Image 1 (cartoon, rainbow, N blue to C red):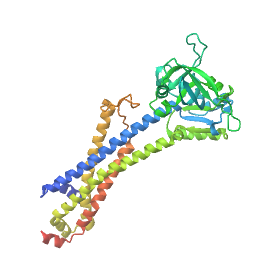
Image 2 (image 1 turned 90 degrees about the horizontal axis):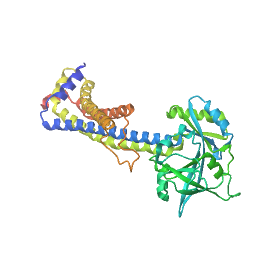
Image 3 (image 1 turned 90 degrees about the vertical axis):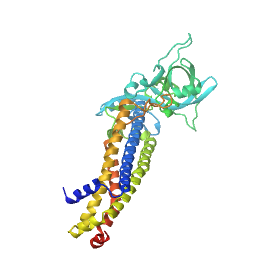
Length: 416
């Protein structure tokens, strides 16, 4: 143990001549502690929300969407699926058809995104079947009241509420052909469906816009051939962004133009970019608490230097260099910052852990898509927050410690 650290430790532990100095020191430690704990808790909660949103998006829309440029669709999708299955780490594939349309229920009508899927394989690339809250995920043709058999449809809960649709109701879907354009317009084709189920993912964009039909019905509605689809959804054996991005690039390179592999992150880039901005904003704003505590450290250190003028003069008179004196007071300030950082990290960890285990803070499930406040602790957050707190504490010690090192020993001793 160096003598500088020994003296700094003694100064920190010694009783002050003025109790006010000790009080400010305790306030500075408490400020660092509260700031660190608040940062850890807030970032952990934001991590939890981000993970929940990510898992629900992937559960609805798969890891990779393999499609053509401009969403024009492509033929021979069975062959494309077989080739995609041969790529390492591809777990499952499923074809889909994606198009905008019109949904009509009596006098009510609204826009809808029609998604045609294979009922057999769609469960391998998404969790949509687990999100059914009313009825079941049944896209088969059914007979209601002795009428003509009608295909089934599954709607988002918010969309169904907006249209006043009940389970078993007959609705109509209308959509333009995928080949329709300004120069060659086509009359929209209307087709009747029976509502067999409602799904709820908790994400308003999906629950208020989407409807699922069988891929054959979507092909008929859009006047597409049986061998043509909009694309293929791909699920990998892991969901890490780096892996998904690399595999998407591998698919794009393998098939070339006009094919395109799009990851879940690319489809929702704006959402996740905004969430990252929110995390940085929270980090900066809550860091102000630690900065206030750092100013308290400055005040404490300046008053300690004034109180210890005689001791500083004696140290310098027996040979202590300016650098050594400066190091003593830097270490003393860092001890306050270190104690506050460790206590704040411990409190933040314990509160996050208790929320994970006991779910103290619940959320109304009918408003939010989760029943309790989500928390996900990351080692990187703990490290970055602790380093930021210690850096601010270190910077706070520089001015008073430099003032201490510049004291004239003769004047300091004479002053006493």
